[in-house]
Image 1 (cartoon, rainbow, N blue to C red):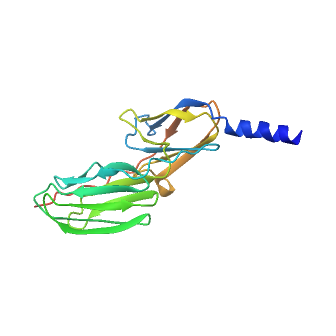
Image 2: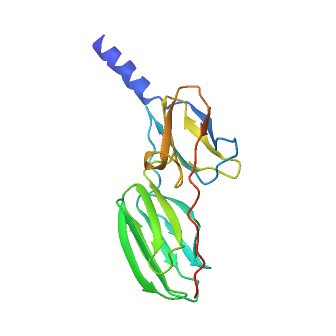
Image 3: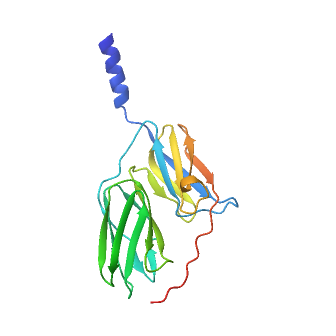
Length: 205
């Protein structure tokens, strides 16, 4: 009887969780969609790590970083090519990754390895108007909202869990809010308040 019970439990635990699409919509208090918010699903009974490694690019052109927001998995390498006719000095003081890429010129590039999850705020020591963010994630259940403010997970486990929304200008501790999701709950909506983005002063070459 004990062996039979153990076998049943083992089979149940080995049964894969049912998957179902999960849609998360992020809007401001006026109902307007919020794009470029990072949505993370943390299922209570299932985890899936992102594929390690990979190469990503954050370029510098027209005195701006491109793209403004980049999502990468833990273990990723990010290159920082300079396409401007002026030198840049890229840095971050973020606790997840502190680094400094001292002056490098047009058509030169530097690469940084990101080994820990967290939010990396980027800046240029020469041009104060330049800013961007790298979101380093340790879960494959991470997505960015589109122009309609929607992030979709096509095969999310249909189980209880927690959904977190982060945005660099979100008015909340750590720039994030969260809510629980239950089994069968496949549509979530967040209403968030954003701070105005910092002004971008014009810089001379």
